[in-house]
Image (tube, rainbow, N blue to C red; front, side):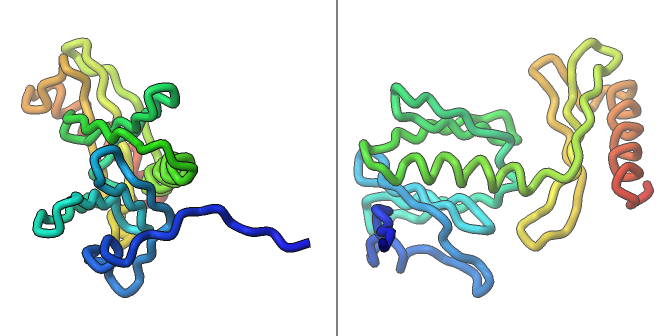
Length: 173
């Protein structure tokens, strides 16, 4: 018995607008309300506007902090490392589930190791060792709203956490 995929094929007009590197590949794609498309590739999240003259928004996975899916509202909210958020209203399409799952997998794949730190001012910082889109490792510090990463005591606590995170995976300081 043969199994058939019901996955929606990415329209050629959308695929042509993607600026994929030779070693990149589309893993999942789904239409968004309003005619836009969310495209998950190995290296990045691509948001393709319905207007063929509009630029394609492309963000490497290391720019994404996390995502939350409101299944009832069919909205995937992208939480960026900058603290900004982008709501992606998914069209009523079976491919939306693939995009949400693959999105989660790609963000998780970019994270190697994480340490949570409470800084002297009482805020919390997540220090992560992540892979950039070329596979190179780097540390990233993401604080909650109460954290001023420029505060000297906070900077020292974050630097110590970065050293520990790097040591945990054998990279040293």
